[in-house]
Amino acid sequence: MTDGETGRTFRLAYVPGVTPAKWVNVWTERLPGVPITLVAVPAAEAVGLLREGGADAGFVRLPVDRDGLSVIPLYVETTVVVVPKDHAVAAADEVSVADLVDDEVFHPLDDTIEWTVRPGLPAFTRPATTEDAVELVAAGTGILLVPLSLARLHHRRDLTYRPVPDAPQSQVALSWPADATTDLVEDFIGIVRGRTANSSRGRTPATPAAPVQKPAQRQAQKPAQNGSGRRAVPAGRKRKGNRPR
Image 1 (spheres, rainbow, N blue to C red):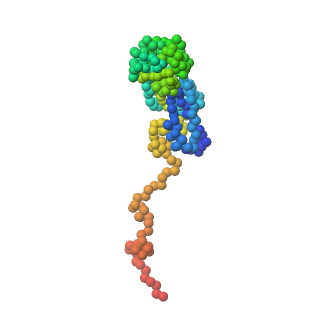
Image 2: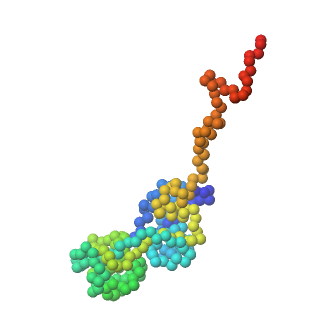
Image 3: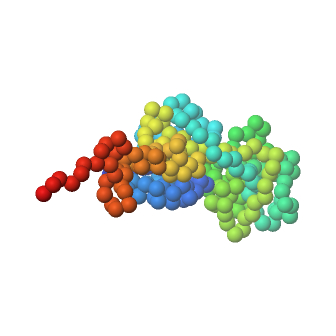
């Protein structure tokens, strides 16, 4: 950490469904002098927050407008259908999009799945958020397709979910302003990518290790001694005799 970073805080944004705890734990172990602040942000507002400088980096859901941003795709989530527990879907281990053709499917305004053709029938309304849509599913007025993490986030006892393998999937990525790739951002990228603290791609300690001398070098620098502990006389040099008293 450079002197200019002393006292700084790293601000990390994250969208619903993303759990940054494992990366935050590594950060606090590796950079204990730099506090990390978590900023929860709706998926639709994450890019704007980064562009406005409201966070140093953030976890977003793709696709996003990448103009002015650096983006590292991380992982893809399974898409699931959320239904009441007494729905016919609940009896299956998984379902296909075709199985939902006769169901009314909610499409919330914050939907993070990029659909080419939306499944099922349009529901009577478009909820503002996924959380609102889950409430409507619980009321028995339709069903909802979301990434697995969002189904877990908004889980209710009266609802269940099943995988839909042939549905489009949501991808989570790490993003930050391209013109603000600071040392702290580089540190966090290294953590997310699983680099060790001593990785050559990471930042190196400020004080280099002392060079290791070879045995021959150490021997050459150490004066030779004879068995009596006195310094040996160089070859070709005569030993002086004792002076007469």
